[in-house]
Length: 397
Image 1 (cartoon, rainbow, N blue to C red):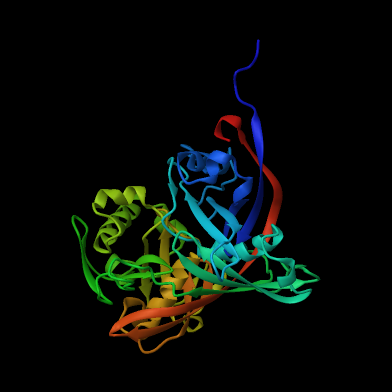
Image 2 (cartoon, rainbow, N blue to C red):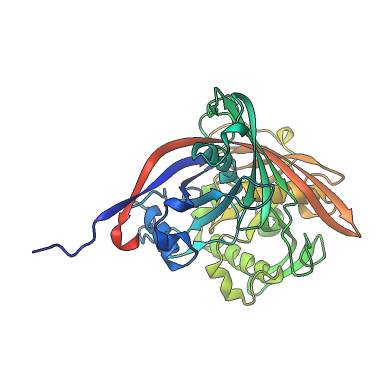
């Protein structure tokens, strides 16, 4: 008797670390025809590749690793957009729900896009020096923004090894500087970086409380609060938050009402299906603490402290796009981020996060009385971990 169950098929894929995240990268033409277009077939494929939804929360039957930092997928293609080399589409995969969130970018995996594009042959060989730096212009399709990656090249190949250290990553690697050009989100009013028009708002959250908040669209939509207003110090580690269900529920409620105030959703209930954006973070002035690695972070090492949630859990380090939001908000006088850093004009800051510290820069200017940011700068590293094929049941391909 013939077994009616479908066999597995294999799809070319590359597994990369970018910054403090990992993801499965695909070249668009390598995907099954039905998944080459947005829609349920593509979502179902990516969910199965990562091993979601998993009621056990482990993603044992997939490439995910049970955290928001490792439950990610990327689709790359050669760009037809003038002035760009590659189109980059990012998918945040929920671990325990059948949900693929396309609403934002991953700043950490942005560092892996240039190296992967070169690896896949999407950059003309004439553009790649034998030794030096290959500049890759990336169209970030989720946010309709440009990212410029400066990829180190040695002997005609991407240089992945090096001595650049990134807190949250165990081993050093080669530095990949990134420029996020005009990273403020475009709003219905033509591109307000602060969707309410204010650098600080009062956020009313029914049943929870009233908070000062900076609501910003830069890198990724983010709402910043003061740590002290939440009863925190800004020195929290993952276990302090992620093992407290009541705290997570309270923070999710604040995030949902913040999303509503930012105009990202029409009803607060919609936030449950939009987990990737906005991010919620809290800030505090410099203070000493012990990072998750056991390394001491001294108050003099940083300009401020920041803790942020991703997909409902405290991030182990800092999301790259949230770092852009932090750098941008710090550059604008009067935001909660700027005030936590001591106020004044700040084009570069170093902030403390659960794994250590991170430096980020931003160039913010006022145009006709409205703040905007021309670019944000930060460095990450990237490395290919595996290459070959992923396998999924044939009924998904």
